[in-house]
Picture 1 (cartoon, rainbow, N blue to C red):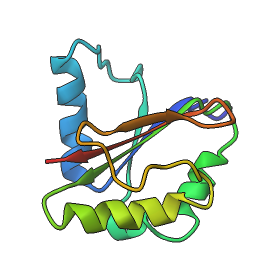
Picture 2: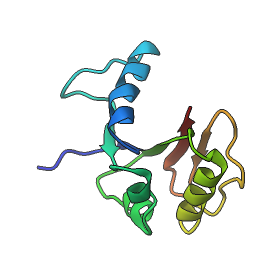
Picture 3: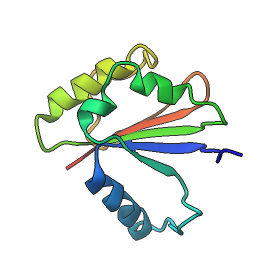
Length: 121
């Protein structure tokens, strides 16, 4: 039986895959192997994460998805990164703000799914 993944976090690469659990633990979230609080998906580069329909496919994943988060690097042209992500999400999330708030974004979609974006400095 496939594992039910209710919470997913899409990240650019291996560095985020390694750092995110450490950040979560440092902020009081227990991270035990085999009992992770969410599934972190390494997209092997922002280009893959922003491919047409990739985010759409993630949003439509069956098995009770309740949360979808995205973490991307802000080290190179953060405004362009947000614009690209905004454009990739817009067909499925029409109420995204044109500018990403400095603290990141968490919104609830019409379906009830929580969607969040954070740009990692």
